[in-house]
Image (cartoon, rainbow, N blue to C red):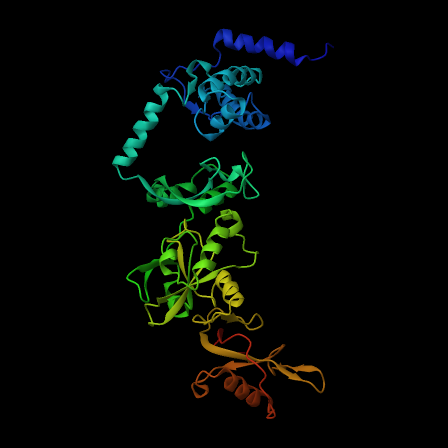
Length: 459
């Protein structure tokens, strides 16, 4: 058997496909169902394609070919992503204008893609740098702008002072510009945005009906990141400015013991005092060198600095300190949060680090696994306390053996009116009532009361 020679066999059939226009699509043919398979347009970022191009484009080509064999009028477009920093950087690298660098590299790109045998319709080849193409992208943008769906706002971007240019996340390596090697910072710049949030509900509702895997659907929903909540206004002590925070739990306002601004927030520079200015400015500079991924890392130690200003909690009139911390992002919500450290892990870690009050306003809900709710029986909800009794003489802990139940447990009981909310008084009373012990010495309170749910009566 003659050994397979890919150069000989593949080139033969690729020539046949090109001569016969095998993959040319007639858009006016309505006798077949239509199928459109599309990968991203290749960007002219070097002298030729790389492995990633081949890996990515094969998937859509397999699907397009399959649909074509199934009787579809199957179309696979091809064109060139010709704008942006990657093309500009390649041109600078080889010392030519972007147009010349682009057009010269295009010849090799096209030859390589044809050699890979993808079933593109080359008769409809496009380039995003062609006026006949980008006139339509400009038309679409104008439509979005006229309908209020394109707008400008300040947004933090990676900025290289040496090259005087913004950088994508991928172009920042260890806090430095990939091209010149100098340190970069996050800088607030005026950027264009599309108001896709107007369609968040519609997209979420449609996601479940898509023929996608559950993993991809979940990723799509998380990317949309819809949060339902409220905007709460905090007046600032001694200032005319109002701080607006977004919260999904407005019911925890009584537990807010401090507020936090993102380092990029416009109010930060207005709130600093002469005593705090230097520390705040140094912290902002440090935060500007971190990526959002670094700042969102839940496991890293929390950092922050006090601005010197105070906000007024709208529900109780208390003055709460205003901090700057990089775990708050300017692009999420309003770039300001009310911190409720008793009921949020990040706020809790921050409060413990800087010795800020932690005030519980929502009781934990406790269900005893040995005595769970029972269908058909009324449930009792009450504030409860649990006593852990230790005998230093015997080095043992006290447990209660319930007469009618097959379990032992620490002493537990309700916080009654007579206790007046005093947990030590409630625990001491319960221990005396259930055990008869009187010589009890309180050591410390661990946590707070809980809402205990049990059946109304025990069999």
